[in-house]
Image (tube, rainbow, N blue to C red; front, side, top):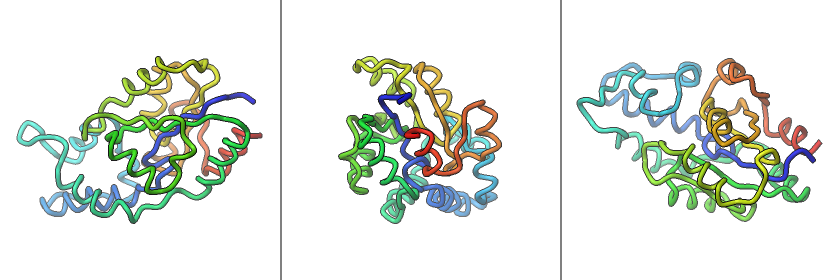
Length: 211
């Protein structure tokens, strides 16, 4: 077994919320008479820090505060309509059966993250659920480093799984292995440029982890 611990990203990796993020931002863009995005254009520009993605869309934060309340409110109002990605339960169970421990590391706010994971009834799979303390999706690297400093697992035995270029960057700063999945918020073409292995589904990823 190559790894002993799996660190999962949440949004876009385990949770299928791409559609809701597109709806939420388009709700705001439409209300302001700004050009809206579709799935292809969204995945071609979404980035971290998230404020840069908003600026690319045309927001000017010298005139207003970030994050945008309209987006957060829309997202929270419809969050419970989101489902987990296909094969989430299978891969989490397979990892557990193979005695791999698992955690979640997210740019979501800590209290909300815990509630979201519990809502989907998968919290029992995780040793730790680690989020951040703001609504700006800023601080995932520091949260990951803090989590790492409190554990006793060798970095070479940890695999971080995410759906964004930021996940690759976080893994690099943490000094752990990383693979990416093409089921979330960033296009496959952009993910491949990281040099990481990119999987098209959690099922194919499951086979990579567990052989």
